[in-house]
Image (tube, rainbow, N blue to C red; front, side, top):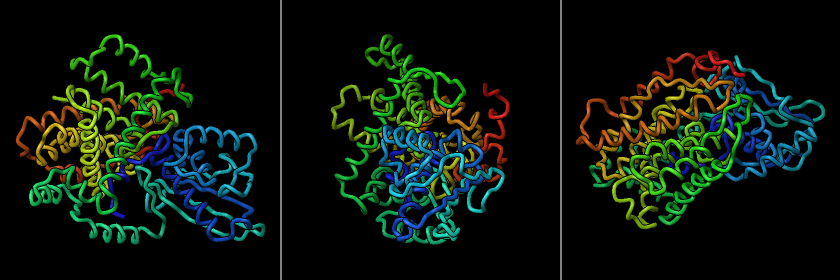
Length: 465
């Protein structure tokens, strides 16, 4: 299917869309196929091979435990944090996995085969699942790639997936792949970028379903912040990173009871930190478009709802309209990155995660603040242009340092980019398409040390303990 807003914004668990959500989804698909094949009751052995970045930083990203949950039949968008804790505790205590939810099999994290120096041709985030019978005969085997944002691709079906994508786009009323095409649609139809995306979404959902779905996505973002503000102490993983959001919130509640505009950046920082601290804890978040960049869009949307001109007099319906328009516009810009480049840190570095999220947020903010399609495109371009070359070098393979602060910085960049664009008339020297292609090429040239392998940058120059 063509990439839509609900593909880019999906509910899952932390800490990583490419290393947690994608692998869990792939494992769940494998378990369902095995169950449907009728050979589940003959399974006697299971093997999981992880390649490249999944093997290199999987422990810090929760890859192995996510795969265990997927093999039990859980999907990232449906599983609740309490279920995660309950099942992982049971597996650890008994050493037994419930394959496809029904067949007990002695298997755990330590049984997975890690191949960090082996990168499969399609993508660095590769994984192979194999089940055998008592005689050692293979019953079912499949290789998947987690390509960013929770999206997965099966080995051998890449061309078919691209063909299906192209065919599904033909069914859209107003298809687009590039920003130039998107702006052309806006001009010919007299619609905004968010409205173009809305028309396309209506090809598969009703207007009410779209609105309710997007408001639900925002409610999960709000719940994520609320949950994070109740947690205290250190983040898991051994780096001894202290949670800051609860203390910051307490201070802001004392110093800024009336949401004074002079505190806008402190509130934006708070929301971004809160979301990414919850993500680092393995909590429930929204990929936006990835988990590693999950705090940027909620933080900038918070700015739009609380500090944009006129919002102090807005009704609840007005605020809901802003949420829907913001997410639709952000989704349209996200499609451009997904179609032309990548949103995977393991493929193009953090420019593909934090950079794309900052670009999406900047464009969305410009639209809800009254920008023209040209100003929206300019805002998105400015934000990405100044995230080009951003490396992915998480210390200890954990989505904590520099990831959490990086979301807050990128959120502020997005707001500044939107304001700069709105002070212009939409004309600018560098196009969004040119920046997206540059990001893709920069990622291709970037050393693998800086693409979510924890083998370069801060990951090797900062002592973990």
